[in-house]
Length: 259
Image (tube, rainbow, N blue to C red; front, side):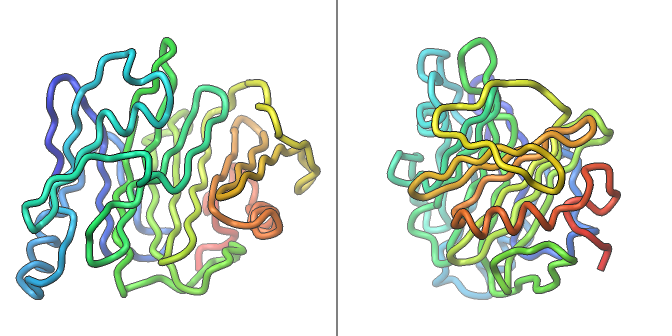
């Protein structure tokens, strides 16, 4: 599913149908190949257009100075109708930056289903490098059990990208046709809040929230972790969701119970 060109190397997690929060774990050092699932879909309905391949094109450092530049100069899609499309700024539905971390959500064009790429980036030496990609098709087979998490959606696709140990970055994604949420738990790191960020009280913690036209960012520090979330929710939905999160040390995080 992933084609690498130049020195570009990125982790791809392809999700077409997912289970509950507690049993969809993928080692971020492993490429989970969804080609067999995709072939089954194509054979079932040849009229459907799906994403067949994500092509990563290596870009020079000067072409990765911003989040937008990094994804648009590196990400290319090959569809099942043999059409190739490069990522462009008009396909960006969310972008957020905090410290040396960044997230960009892209909507893949011209597919039958709504199809999203969740791009996770890290700033290294003043250039934004892509560290992982969660590739998610919004199929009809959705999850309904929220396990105590106050998600403002009744049906959703869910997956998580989880590291091997407590020092790794862990990311969970939730999405349906209209809304999407990315929740992360990273090893604790310090950084200054960006302009427009407001400090609030949340679950006994000081938290920081920034609400923009089409997206929100909220983060706080809990024990040895930085907990963050970005999404296209309202401020009220964002705060309710954040208030429903358990301790960062919970074995079920971000769910409150195993379900």
